[in-house]
Amino acid sequence: MNARAALAWGVAVVAERELKERCKSARQWDSVTPSVSAHMKGRSYSQPPTITAGLGRSKLKSFPATLHYHVRSTKREISIMSTIDANRVIFTGENSAIRLSNNDSDSFTTNATFWRAMSSGGGSGHVLYLKSELTEARWRIYSDNIAMARLLQSTVLGAIYAELLDPTIAVIDAQFSKSGDVRDFWTERLVTRDEEVVLTWYEMGEPFLVHTQPNAVPGRPYGMCTVLVPALGARLTHNGIEAQGRPWPRQREGRPSSTCVLGLCESWTEAR
Image (cartoon, rainbow, N blue to C red; front, side):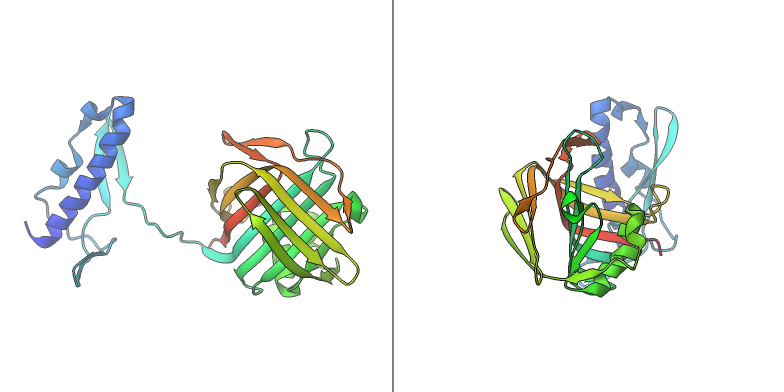
């Protein structure tokens, strides 16, 4: 067995082990024939390279990325999946939300979406989009980077809230700061010439990872990958006056969540 075939067989063994573990719980392993490694062992492969593997200082490039097997007489295919998202990254940073209401509904009396950009087509910076009885039920935008604020309006945020597609909404210059520990509480604060807005999340739940693809939802041409930390407690104040309402628990595909969340390590993508 040459080095290329040995490497391919080694990959197959790893895939077979994973398949075996998955089938155990469903009691399907006995019906999986032939075994993946047996299927591949002793074969030669000359298809175009799909995976590059390093062996010391050398690299072998031609071994199969697809393994075939049968489960309960149904032909299926396992592909060794790429770890790279093929879409274009248009934003990386954080995106946290406080959505409050007086009753358990989606008719929020306060809707605040806070963004911290580490990288975007408009550069880095901060922006808060706020609609509340404290703003007379109108969207107000605070930012230290108007280019980044407008970019989010015209892309990912505008796809969620059509009202924010309006470029005539003024962007108020603000300075931002943060404090806290996401295990206990987190506070974002902004100050303008005559305003102060403070957002605080507390009573944190268990974090979970969300990953969506562009166009997975009609009208949503953007994908997203983020770690969400649900907060069962949250408050927002504007010049010392607290917004009405409270957070409400939610379920997201069976995971406990909330109408108020921290969105950490968040990236948004679009199809190439």
